Image 1 (cartoon, rainbow, N blue to C red):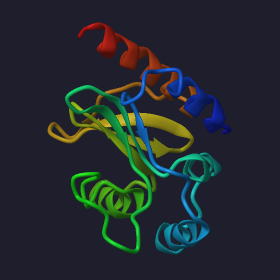
Image 2 (image 1 turned 90 degrees about the vertical axis):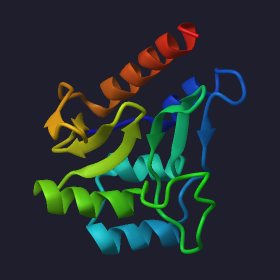
Image 3 (image 1 turned 120 degrees about the vertical axis):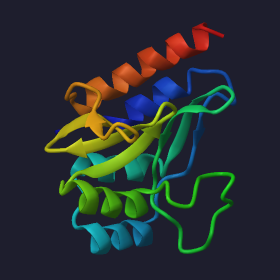
Image 4 (image 1 turned 180 degrees about the vertical axis):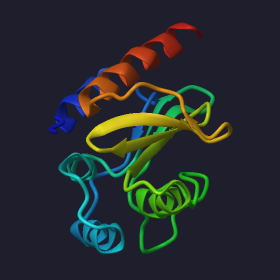
Length: 156
């Protein structure tokens, strides 16, 4: 499973300033802490973190999607990213409650938890405790995010 995260970031950069907030790439120390805490991340997760360490996408009165990064050794501003909205914070809770070895990648504005498991991305409804999306490759998921984000922006 491969994903060209540079392509995705390039697509995001085509939008006006302020629509997206991408954090800089994750540093090696944080990647190592992630590996020690949760095991070797899939190459698609590592590639994402080496390209950007979390993001808020299609942000109009709140982001449509928050992609999680890795928590910092020092506290970040809780208004920037919620204290638990990091891969290394949310994934252990997901794994212990669901019994999955998945990796939590982010949260949709409507409460869809974005999970990578067995090389596919799905969304889990955190209120109703059920899957609410089809299984998608990471590339197909990224394309869907761009499509849905365009519709979100057009509706304003």
